[in-house]
Length: 66
Image 1 (cartoon, helix red, strand yellow):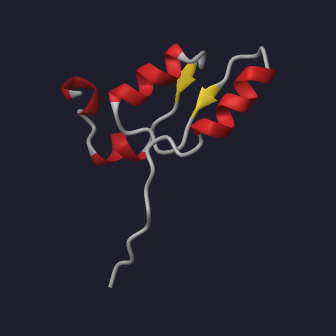
Image 2 (image 1 turned 180 degrees about the vertical axis):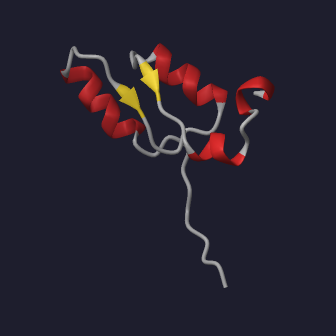
C-alpha cells in the first residue's frame, strides 16, 4: 500500500559543498539530516547552520538522546 523511496543521508551535501566553496555568506545545510555525525560534519565543513525537520517531527527528543 505504501511505496518505499530510496533515502540517502544528507542528500544535498555534495551540491551544498559547491555553494560553500563559492559563497562567503552564511549557509544552512538541509535535506536528509538525521544523525549527529552529519550535523558535526556539516558544521566542520563550513556550514553555519543545519536545518532539520522530519527527524525532529519523528522524534522530538532527538537532541537529548543523540
